[in-house]
Amino acid sequence: MARSKEFEEKEVLDKAMRLFWEQGYEKTSMTELVEHMGIHRRSLYDTFGDKHNLFLKAMDRFDDKISAALAGGVKGSKTASEALQFIFGFMIDGDEDSPAGCLMVNSAVELAARDVEVDNKSTKSFTTAEHLLREIILWGQRDGEFTSTYDAEELAEYLHNVWIGLRVMARTSASKEKLHRITHMSMKLLEE
Image 1 (tube, rainbow, N blue to C red):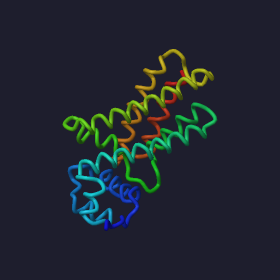
Image 2: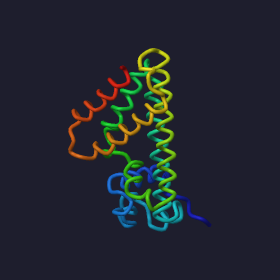
Image 3: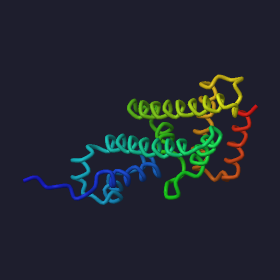
Image 4: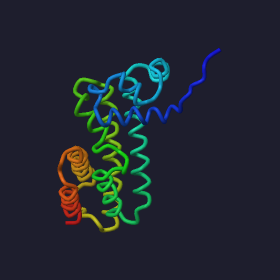
């Protein structure tokens, strides 16, 4: 008779995601994962496969959670400017209980050059982010909040670059005031 799982899969996946987010893929050992996730090594392998597969699932979980949070914040915004301010604020401050930075950005920097699956997941996530930014920019251009001098696609690519930079700088000792100044300048460029 097969034993039933004694853990909630999403809950332990969230724990693995957080550890990978804090430490990166290479630095995180299977022993640390087992201890941090609070499950037996055999259960980890039976449920998630190897470390690499667990990491890929953690990336998917991160992408789903962040996408949902961003979509909710954008949907609740009354203006395109407010939507972008929400996104930039989220990039700088994140969730109260989350590590600084971004698992997707960290993973791309650490592994994308040598891991096709990580590169594909990162690139897909970045493309989705640019699409979201493009839609917000088009909204702002239609409503006269943002300049129409520049193509929305190009502005989205530019703002995504700012987004990535903010996520990287959020992991450093850079002050939040500095990061907010960067977002303020980016917003000014849109309003010209």
